[in-house]
Length: 206
Picture 1 (cartoon, rainbow, N blue to C red):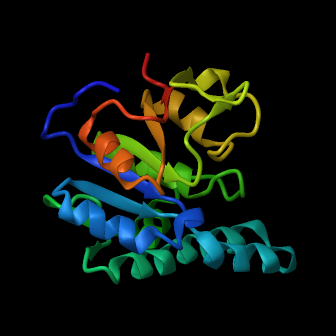
Picture 2: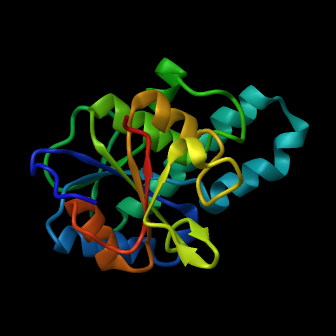
């Protein structure tokens, strides 16, 4: 990754797989004085929706799953970070987005399990013309048991650690995305700051 302008906003998706360390991660980011709008994953809250999804239709399950990200958002904010619902009402520091209202008003994503919080974060980053970082429970995208430093979005043709829709959105929005291991807190700080770190950058920008 290259150093970015200090005025560039970052959207940080914090995956549900990090729930055991997520509150500590938010504390670390606040102490590091970095700026990011955090998009929560769905975690165990979305898994509950998946469990019952077969008893309802895709649209109902879609909105239930997005409400699950709000639940995770409240959990993340228990560390003292501020909750926001308006995408553009964000100042410096760490803020936790409750995505449901913005998505329900605009309905920008397909009602499918192919579109998870990864795609929500991609859409939010596009709306804000922001950098996109995804913190998950792996070091990045692997090939031959090694982390790939960069890969084109168009080359992601098989299942990876991001959802199936995100590579298409990165191409559509001409947006890059950096994946880092959220259990390594300093890597997340480095990715937000635009510094080189261990991880994978998915290139959607032409």
